[in-house]
Length: 87
Image (cartoon, rainbow, N blue to C red):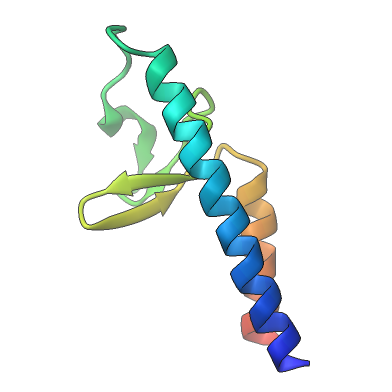
């Protein structure tokens, strides 16, 4: 059972990573040369990133990534991580 959960988590992570790469590429190509809000306006409490116009799930930040909480998929990811930790 544990192996199934780990394999499922890895597969889900790889699918979401691929989607994020595609969405990031598409978003950057569509927004070349446009003025858009500074990133600081989309961060709340310094670590929560909320930008409904950004289709990326994982936003590069410093040396790591943060989740875009404006995406509905983040709720699924959070629920899945919560279930793995507490079950």
